[in-house]
Length: 299
Ligand code: AMP
Ligand code: ZN
Ligand code: FE
Ligand code: FE
Image (cartoon, rainbow, N blue to C red; front, side, top):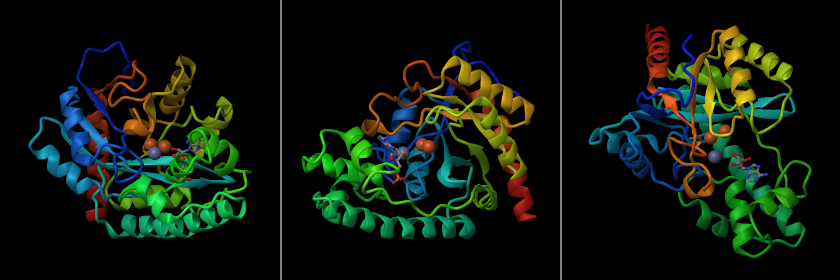
């Protein structure tokens, strides 16, 4: 398994984890492809949350650019009482299995958004769906947009306060959402011919290394293909942990910035917080795996 060290290589760079206006990013899919080219990336994957709606524009824009556009998606999946994220790369947009699952997730989100607004109203913070839509545009509405609307209305000073005081687990306007299981998420990505990668296995939550290893083993048992070895938020120790787990379990290396445009202004496309560098030497193995998955489903 190739695990080239970040920052030590002078080879071309890629970014396999980004978000556009189709979910909660602020660049349109076409702008994202153009920015990827302008900063010299050789390949970029669009991995919007729970939607493939940006992929047609993204791939179309990249046709006249000097950058490879990879069709992706980021799924949130249940993990016992919590959740984790699985990125699908080289997926076929329009695949009925994947799209059916995404549609169920989106329909549930709509019901959930309504319940969140009802709970906010009950504690004296009424918001209309239109106010939330003003923040989301045409993209999938989620808690970040409700948080922005709460800030715009002056209920909260900033997005962190909106989450910490109202929207996060245990707070008055928190509503759990329906998610597929990890096995279902991985299977849907495979059905669409894509490779399934465990996104940011460490970083957000400070899970003990033994727990991360155990989760990776279980996910591998569900046919997980890879893990994000490169990510904006890793410390050197976390990087080492993911590398060790990836090698132990023979998981392919993937990764990217998790760029969201102005939604997360500290993270830049390609370079993350300044020192991210995802080498394009990891691409052939991912592409080869995708080709094998594709051959299996069409054969
Ligand atoms: P949702 O998918 O609607 O449950 O929203 C999840 C998204 O909310 C995550 O992907 C983060 O971007 C964002 N988020 C979650 N917790 C926080 C937090 N404490 N502060 C800011 N953003 C958060
Ligand atoms: Zn996001
Ligand atoms: Fe994520
Ligand atoms: Fe992401």
